[in-house]
Length: 367
Image: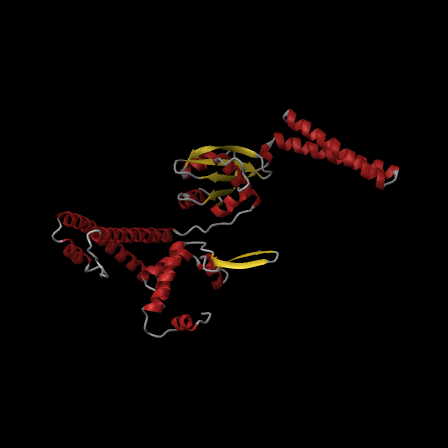
């Protein structure tokens, strides 16, 4: 034990003994007070010896908890025991095998591993779980709120804080999706990226043509190329610009069609997606986006819990006499909210056939 720790324990024993003596002699008769004081000193001696032995012999504590802050190259790691005492800390490469080697220390059993959500969390979760560790992925917003009072923010301090949160259980678990859901999500993200780039190319051509007083107007995607070439005819600079950007657009549209075919095959093979597509206004992309986000429906106790999870319910602030509701919380996956909004817009604006959902929207009922 270090001299500083020994002095601290001595001051603690003296202060506690004096306070207890005052209490015992005020409340009990002299013989009873002496007996109680002897019992207290015996218990305190045992407590001190236990603390001293446990501080010297860390191997008596088998269960350890681990917190980790992830980065692309290296991860900061902190291993603590069930008392919160740091056993080991440092950095390791952001690889499941390297992290597994680092956290195994003198034959200790790693009770719980905590990861903060990030781009590598799913991959590391799968790799560490395969090695036999109990792993939890923690909500980044909750971790940030827990560390809001931290004066000095470093990866080392964050790893220490995450380890303490894991030990105490003061965190919210994040659902890690199945590998098939992750693959579908990657395809959906790639499709959205290509759609955004095609839209950006078209908007850029509109802006360049507008500078010369040429307005594209409302044109379908199929007729876009012919309309742009028609407007740029006779102006050499515009002809070269439009032709170059149309070539890029054609390549992107070709790859977009390839991704769409793959996503349609995935939708046809999933009975849940097929059921969702029976709703008016819901196509393969919307159904796959929702199915991919939910992944495991069993983690929701009630169907009503999905709305707040997606951030579609109003926020609320209540304190004393103040009680006000705000906009929707916008928690969760933004792409799912976008897909559901597009489906609702299609249902209201394009679906002509009567259905229960459309009647509920138009009639103002709480469907």
